[in-house]
Length: 344
Image (cartoon, rainbow, N blue to C red):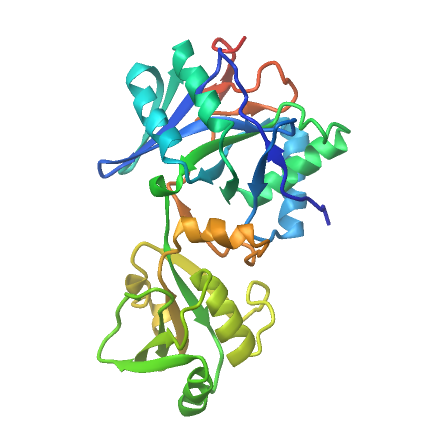
């Protein structure tokens, strides 16, 4: 197993390559600053919020060793309004260099050329108190292993390509947790749950509407589960601690063969699918607040692997990163070829 720990990073100030990655979906626009994660002096703490699967890390590590490129950036999140405002304003003076449409989503890449904007972004970035990986924990761990195997772990060599978004510019999806457990006694299970939750039977299925509320489908009935006390933490952690471990004696839901997580904008639609509709037990969890995920990570608490699903997702090959050359940290993909014309 590859061991890795949260590292510390600094903005790569490169006058040739300062990019903004923009995602537009149904007129909702998210602008993120393209950065490289490195190990430097004057560091910014970088948090992780999920555990990783060692097998997946090994598979990705082999891919990086073979290809020598990173095809998809990590998503890193922050909470500083001033920096995000400046990122949004910088679009007006940036040059659009690439646009890709994928269904209802448009991905754009802008290059910032104005020196004053780059200096201002650098200044505000270096004042950030902390950052958190939202999407890409396995890629981060595999790339850490890649640089470690290259005996250049301390400097992170050419760095790890990432896009920095404010927590207001991204979101998570609702979670539907299915537990394929047979012969469940409804009365006995509800009695267990009542130790920690107020259990209210519902007339029909619905999404959770309150903080930390879970919706339970048990056989053909639905229940709203509200914790007795105002719990700190994210919904999936409450599901893990109070439902899986305490009520069902499931030590690790991420490895349990009867537990499966689905993520959707509207998980109620999933309940109508044939393979799910006949499941005796499942739980609806509301979208996680990215700010609460950061607070959870600050306490050095890790969720199970793949416990969250962040959107928007970034495209592969929209912007790629040459892992071999620290002097050309960012290159653009063009017709499946690497275009170095914008690099120093």
